[in-house]
Image (cartoon, rainbow, N blue to C red; front, side, top):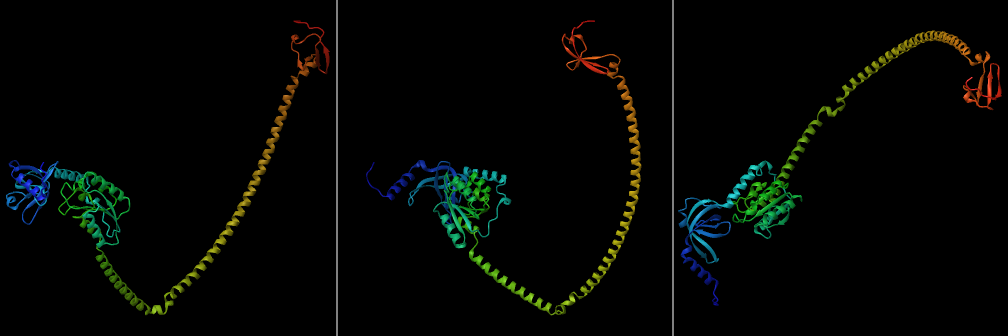
Length: 444
């Protein structure tokens, strides 16, 4: 390796010379997707050509692009012919395009359109779901990159237009693989903190730079927010999925700040005009009321207000007398009716009492007769039963010469119950005696 020290210009010039003299990369055909396309007043086109793995800056001068039969835009998939060169002042590799033809829609643009169609069919873009933006927000959430131009634009715009507002920042990555997840987390955190509005902003860039804002999960998170959200991503010509699902889309970060806040000068002017109109209206109301009051005060009825109720007082007195007379008459009638009812009740009670007394006497006589008959019948039956009892009494048998032998308080029914020397008690018809068994004869 040569140890000679060269300048940057000499090195870049050497590389440019080598590339421009390499026939293999001159007039080369390259297919890719257009990104970050710009057309200048000079007629020159500047853009990037990319695929899933790399990208290269391109320039197509006006003398060459006049032959192109279509208007290129971001997302177009094209095949270009050009020469590889180096832009010396920046030391950047570039493709000097001399021809271009349309070869299809770029992959990223196709993904964007497919997701846009899917979410639109699900209703995530419906106007009916969009929340109104508060007219006078005092608590604003700003979600954007840290120390970015977009952040500075929003802060400057809000401080100029609406100084009473307080801004709470949630710094996030706005580009790269981790960007979408950080934005989702920031939105979820902010949604429960009572903000009046959320601003989600980012400066301009290529479709690759803005791709985080085309994330499906991010779109669904924005759709589910309870807090109104305004998006300002890229430039006016840039559209991302979050712009369609948000409550309001602004063309730029500055535009988002302007859409979110009123102009304090205009508010103060409206307040001043409203105060003037209110004062004038109050003065007119007071003047008209004073005139009506004076007109009413001059009326005769207010000079002699007793006329308002004199006739009603007379009518009321007449009604009072009439009512008193009616009440007295009605009271007398009620007393008379009450006396009649009382006398009727006394008469009815006397008759009823006599009737009940006669019925009670009859029932008493009937009860005495029934009781006497019942007693006679009971005495007759008792005599009959006594006769029967006397006829069958064991004493009658004993009086005919029979006796009953008792041993230990029980009648002896068999000789088997007796033994010699047993003490027995013998009952006779007219008395009893004690004895002793001297001999027991079985079977006699």
